[in-house]
Image (cartoon, rainbow, N blue to C red; front, side, top):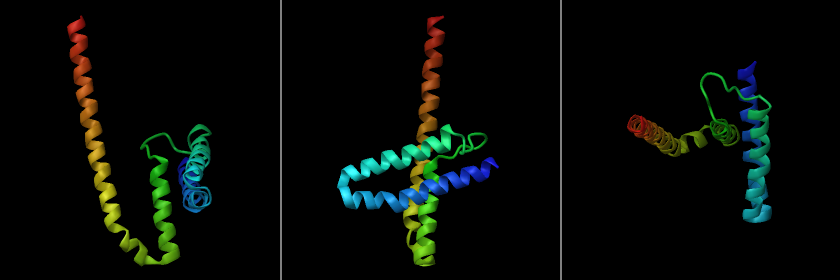
Length: 124
């Protein structure tokens, strides 16, 4: 049941982001974008993480993945399969960026652990 809650929570966040955020930006400019971000992401984060809809056990997946998948599939359903094919170069670059970011974060974490480990040894 937790997995279903995770999928539904991420999908609801994605639907609001893809449907409402743009309308706020068009109506109120940058301030509308900030307001939409605060209201939509803040509310959905509260529901998905604090209330416990989101599955926090096992593999951790952020709401951004659910929002991205929802946006991708929304365009595929509305505009057809060609919209999915046209977005593949962007998806590839985003995936490569995620891989580079993950590798960088792991190396930084390892470096900081080694640095703190050496510091503790010197203090003793």
